[in-house]
Length: 171
Image 1 (cartoon, rainbow, N blue to C red):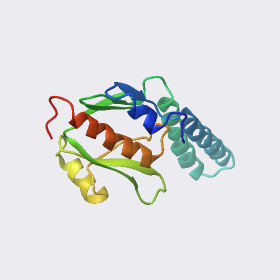
Image 2 (cartoon, rainbow, N blue to C red):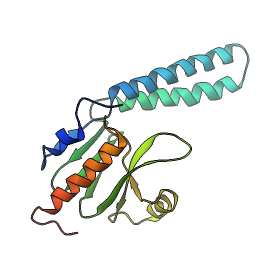
Image 3 (cartoon, rainbow, N blue to C red):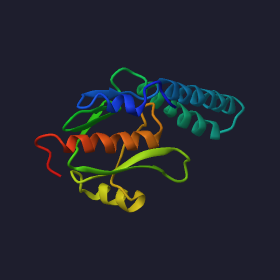
Image 4 (cartoon, one colour):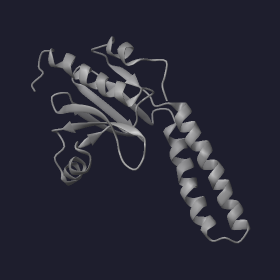
């Protein structure tokens, strides 16, 4: 879901730091949608359908994910002159600009959602190799932070390019 902040507005604030947050509207809609299906699961259970337990648990978990994602500090993307930090469900990971390359927006089948994928030379483990084989890149941003995926990929590439002009950048 697009926000009022554009990628150009964010890029104009280089070298930052600039922190982007996920769309509360998007996560609120996910929470509400999961709540509807969780209630349907409860109705199925009352009518004797055992599959209602699966529906209730699956969409109840979706509600929990949506609720946590909307809490302050649970998710963010912070850009600065040396790299970027992703906070997802209160877990932080950092990548340096010289390690992060090839930012693209891509859809991951079968979902029609688009994500920003990139190569991160700082991560070379088994999971990174599996991701690279599956998606062509070993890293991905977990959200688009209120921007279109194409705009966020372009922002990340342009921010990295600007960072390459700063002292101490090797890559």
